[in-house]
Length: 263
Image 1: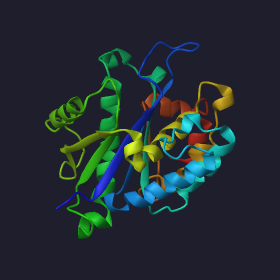
Image 2: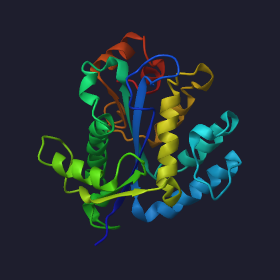
Image 3: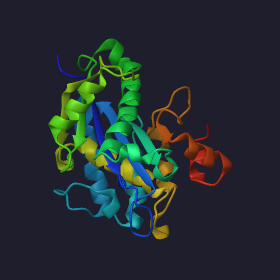
Image 4: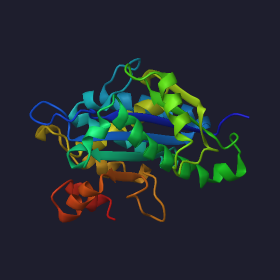
């Protein structure tokens, strides 16, 4: 029996820690879009509509960072039109607030470490869904579709998360199965083009360049974010580390977070 869900994953920002003008970003964002695999054709239609709104070449994969500012709102509107199509999960890491950044010196360690938290939440979402109970569209498991990265191979992804099964996590391993991990180019799965817009949109909430900074996209994605008992923070939106959450509570960082996603 085939899998029920597709979890598409992409990131925004870089993994470096050399802060300063035109150097490493302060924020690293990993995002996921979770939807029924059977509804991928509907996601494809939404992407096609977004490309029309953006004046985009239909054959090219949509990349939110390259969409003109005046076209960004219509693009996001295309993806949020049907709240039942998918759910989004966003992990935001404020790198300057990490207490021990040296533990992330190993190549792609930051990406792997925080993708773990994304998959935890994605697995909870699938576990608690109606589809998981009735298995109308598959066996209740999820295929994880990573956006292709030159520096990370498919084998390395599968190895890392296979090894993670021996460590304490709250990932539902009956749903998340490393043998169902695949990598694809964004042009090969509509969900990867949608999640690119999610990750980039939240990155723009605190973009290092003032003329590109806008919390509007963070607000617009709210209807699509995973929530539990109407709570988004900690579920559809998780901010790391606790020191960053403290700054947000004090009003010295990311004012949009408390405004649109209160604790």
